[in-house]
Length: 185
Image (cartoon, rainbow, N blue to C red; front, side, top):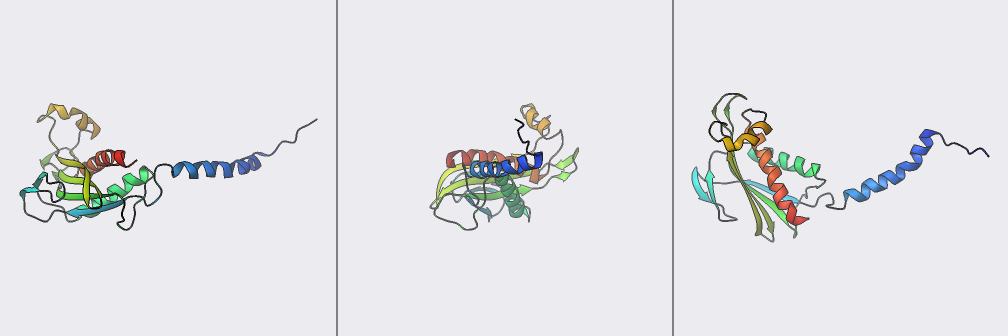
């Protein structure tokens, strides 16, 4: 009449295979590891205005930090990992993302006072067979709130501080991946 009680660790051990299977199956529903190849390059040219060699849009070209490609690649990887998407190692016949950096200028100054704010500009192209499918353009110089009150949301999101070029690029990468991956799903 008495039922035999299974101790807690044994009950947990019996549920472990089920939990692992649920996690494993749900993680692969959108993308498998290594689904997206990302090509990052810097624009080779002087300062001023130029035309993007991929989408033919105008760009306000400026100085590009020596580590810009590495910084952008790290931010893209981090964002994709958070979304459960892996990076492919080699370019294949499937879709891929091309990022063309044409400006990556670090701020001159600190968090609360700057001589020159950070500025970042890049195009993100969703490519298939070397043909542009979709484009996301990010081109922003941080502005003081007194210069543009419409940026009050960004001002509070950034903690009321002058941000680095890396932080500015991170915002652009996140928005760009939202835009490009929407069509890939």
